[in-house]
Length: 77
Image (cartoon, rainbow, N blue to C red; front, side, top):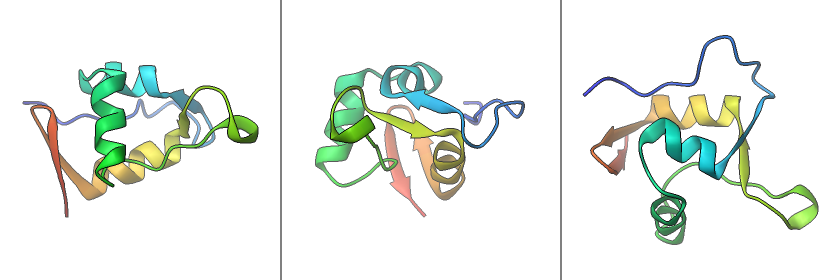
């Protein structure tokens, strides 16, 4: 399986929604929220504490370089 990564031309401050991140990894929003409920996965934010979940490209890169993503499951190094 090819390594997942954030496009290199994206600025570190680029906003990535939970849906977009799921598409990058081949996962659904429900799967990503289940990870969050288990305390794994990237740190998500909301604008003013409400609305869609998002993370920055920098956080996505940090997460993807410090974890092992294998077929829908992850383990943190």
